[in-house]
Length: 177
Length: 395
Figure 1 (cartoon, each protein chain N blue to C red):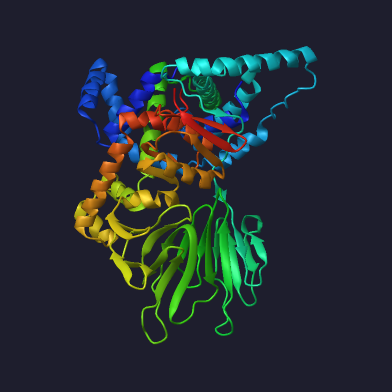
Figure 2 (cartoon, each protein chain N blue to C red):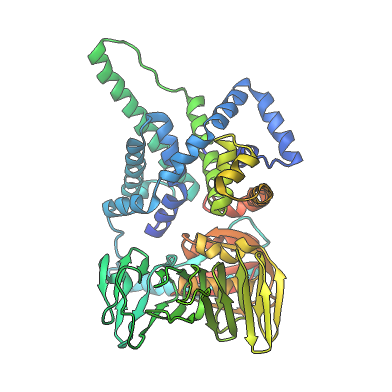
């Protein structure tokens, strides 16, 4: 049976991806966090009935999150129908739900990789990607030379390549047995 | 919901795509996946477009308070009820254990390298956290992690403030004259703390380390004594006659002298000392006639000799940024770092060589998860028991 320590590891390993996934369904961070936390508590109460295989536990918790999220959307729809008489229930299809799951897991990997970069590299990556700034603009804003912007970028690319290396990748996702 | 290896690999592939680090094999695989279904391409565009927004969401999530909330709601595990078990059951259990201990060596010998990972952990060990003692000039000791937040009354006339994992000497006026008291900040194994010195220089103190410093710096120089590891951000300061005041870190193996800069000092008694520079310039000396100046990106190793080499600075300061980052490091060195951060003993007697590893791991992980990762390399087997780790050769 899964121990308290294992549950904590599962939680820490998966919290970000699970909340992100639930958010794509319920569109509220606070609600998503509640749903994920409830799912872990519910699993703990029923752990004797679920296989202790960590992969199975993870799937079980994901299923609980999905069902709770869809229920919440359904409730909201019902309430709205009372309010403005619309008759329309839009629930995401199964392929869409799986897409959300894939997005969640993908973005968590990117996020982890980014958070391991030194702060300067991270900021430069952000300014490049998000704000579409050129090396010159970044250099002026940060008060450093264009060359050091370039070398920070190179360092970031090198690090991310190494970090996201498929062989390394196995090492970095240890609890998915 | 089924979330299998295939999906995990797919998430890795897409993450590499988003970071622009696809290999040639990846490119082929991605192309195949995009051809499978036109919806895949639309999906990829969508997640690419909202990439930054998604990353913002993820950085706002805080796992520690969330876990505390969940933990408070869990019905505790039942304690093991040994006493209710009949004697015959105990006897058969003993037999089973005996059989197992006899059978196991045979089995492990036979076992070929499998994909399964079997770190044995009876009680997992949590990572280090903010924990430190402050010894004042009069010899009294404050346990910093137990003090309430805010002002702390310390040596006469000295006011400190404590805030989470940091203690600061900046808040109060320090007497300009009179004898200077020395304070000592010490972290145990499994602890770390941050310090703001009276000149507003900042210090990050790693586990099992100690820093001795005056509560007020004299006019000619600033001098502290380090045993263990610390990262310094030294503020520039001028003496009353307008000279830049030097800042000196004394270690058991030599001195590091700077004017104002950022650098890391490693000075544990059981390994060579090293100073790594991020900015500015630093002079390292092991005696009156032996000193060298190092530049950013360089590291001075203070062993029997004084050597300077170019290093990956990120590796040296990874601990301060919350992770272990080992690039081709021997097991012995990794073991020492784990011992200090998790406060455990690591027994390598069952290991023949000293193989090298490359890996990055968050320092927030519990010990068993770190060992599990190392074990996946297939080189060693780790057993965690009663706060001790035993390493043996795999197979």
